[in-house]
Structures are given as C-alpha cells and as structure tokens.
Image (tube, rainbow, N blue to C red; front, side, top):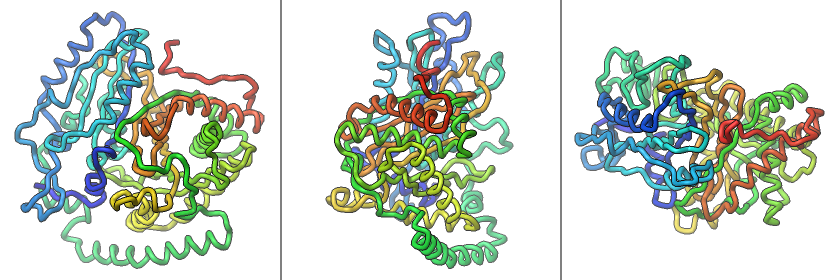
Length: 478
C-alpha cells in the first residue's frame, strides 16, 4: 500500500455522485486505407490481449485502518482489463451529434472505486469513415497535462508504425517495471532522504515565504488596482449547485486565425483563448438576460510539472479578469492581457510549494460544497476554469489511423457548472466545453459564440474577420 499525496487525495475527498472528478479526452481518427468492417473489433481484441499494465492503471484507491484513514494506492488483485477497455458503436445516423451525446453520458458516470480509476472506450461508426476513442481517468491519478502526455506516448508520427503500446501499457523505456517502493515514493514527494536536512530547510524557507508572497500580491493589487483577487467574482448562472449529468461540446479553429490576432496585438495564444471565451460568455449570458455588471473571473491553471514528473497533480492557478462588462473586444483583450501579466508577476521568484499554497488559497471557496448549503451561501472565488494545454505539433497515428482531433473533456465542479479546456494539435486549436446538463442549457450555442467572438477580435485588430471563417476541421468531414 502506497500513501497518496494530499494534492491527489483531495480529488477523492471532493467527489460525490453529483460531482464526478475525472478528466477525459475525445480523439477522432480516420480509418486507414483498406480498413475492413471489423478493423476496430480486431484492434480491440489485440488491446485486451496485452496484459502488461503499468502500476498507475492497475492500482486502486483505498483507505482504512491499515492506512490510518488516509487514501492510499494498492494493487488490484482481481484486475480485469476487459472491464476498463470497451468497444461501442454509435446508433444511426452516426453523426457527430450522436458521438458527443455518447461522450456526455459516459463522462457523467462515476468511476468504480473498487477498481483502478480509468476507462477507455473505442467507438466505431462515426460518419465519414472514422472512429473515436474516449478515455477518462480520475484526477487523483493524472491531471490534464499529464493525461494528455500519457495519451501522446501511445501514438506515433510514423503512419506505418504498428503494435503501438496503449496508454495503460508499461513504459517501454523503463528499466524497472515493478510498482515503486515506499522509499521511491518519498523521494518523488519530498526528495532524497539522504538530503533530508536540506529538504526540510528549503520547505521551512518556502513556508515562511508564503505569507510574504501573499502580502506582496495584495499590496501590488491594491496599489495598482490591476490584479484580480479571490472572492471578487460576481455570482452567475454557472455558480450554482450542479447535478452529475454532463453535456459536452467541441470544435476546432484554425491556429492561423489565432496567430493573426496574436501578431497584430502582441498577445499570447492563451490571451486570445481567454478573449474568445470572454466574448462567448458575454453573448451567452446576454441571451439569458444574466450578464452581471461586474466582470467574470476565470481561474487559469498553470502547470508546475517538471520533466521527470510522472502522473499525479502539479498545478497552480492565476485569476484572470475576463472583462465581460466591456462591449469592445479590443478593450476586453487589453484587460485580459494586463490581468494575466500581473498574475504571472505574482508567481515570479516563488517556489513550487509557495505557488501551490497560494493556489490553494485561491481555490478554497471550492470547499464550500462540503458544507450543507455552502454553494448557495458562499461567494464564488471565481466563475469558471479556463485551461490551455499544449498539444502535439505534428500529425499522429495509431495503428495506421490518422488522428484528426483531440478534444479535452474536463471537470465541472459544484458552484462551477462550466469548464472550458483547450489544446492545440498541428494547425488547429481544439475547444472542449464541459457543463452540467441542467445548469448550462444549450451548451452547443457557446460554439457559435466562440466563432462570433473570434470574428469580433479579427475585425477589431484588422485581422480580416469580415466574413465568417469558423472551421470545424476535425469534427466535420472535409
């Protein structure tokens, strides 16, 4: 039994039937040339025959007397690969609409805590001679960045590559395939025990620096009136108790369009993503006569992951003023850029521990649902989470099938009914919108609003957005 870091176990503690806490992804593939009608069935049978499974996909979460009431990982002695890897087919007509409806249902169901916390669904029959793969893994096992990196290792840039290891397989570059021992886990968490005194000294120094870092951030915000602080967000239709049912919407945009706005303004790609989201949220809320006078606030995760990190969670967060109270798209983009710049400056010079501690303070309002009526009574710390995860820059293949799109399927939380997560793939920007089915009605309209928001930005900065050029490259057959 291996102790679970608190940064991972908190996702198990926060989970309930109404609040599944797993991250997922939808991958869309072209069938390779010459593929027969049983192509995906044959692939499925090959996959479940591979019984070399990495420990992260074989361990289950457990707590009891032996772990002193704390969550820990223990090997599943009755591991059943066929339970975790499943083959499905879409009902006819097998349009993208049916695919997204299936993913919405799958994403709303809890992972079985009596088993390792992951599933992988192969889905055949997507229109246009395609198939899809939807996978999900509990947030206590992987965060979004590490889950995407893991799925990337299962693919190849070589279209002729075959017998590629699936995401749950043992890493081929490992010398030792056994479950790491407790000493290895301690080294991963706090460093080599032989250097304990140095580690403790650094941790004490980091802890002492947290207070001064927080005070410095508050002083800067008060003096410049430019930084977004926790609990400033207005209450919106997204900041309500949610149910366990989910709705998922996805779409791709050309990176060429995004980069044109970047080049004209000096903004980052993430700034443009936030500005697109801001404009779309503004339009969506106006439709329901629910746009607050004060601007919405987004929590924007940042990865603290080192190259040697494997799985688990290593994230910080910046609060961003989305400027949804401003009608001018150029003004919204300028305010978003300034807010993100000040947020990044707050973290300059801080250690990973200090950033994690400040992020915990930012996220503390998310603990309100653990109290009776907490979501309705506590002010929202922010209105939603908007994540941007860098994706593969070159085309990828799986058993000869070309990957056409990657769409993140993320985690709405109680009091946070909508999540927007974005990744890049080759020359596309891939949006995945995940919402509570009841609290965020007509979620698919947000895709139209994202296109309108990008057109607004293009016109505002002279990027040639005079005509609608929205592209759904990966979802709609070209």
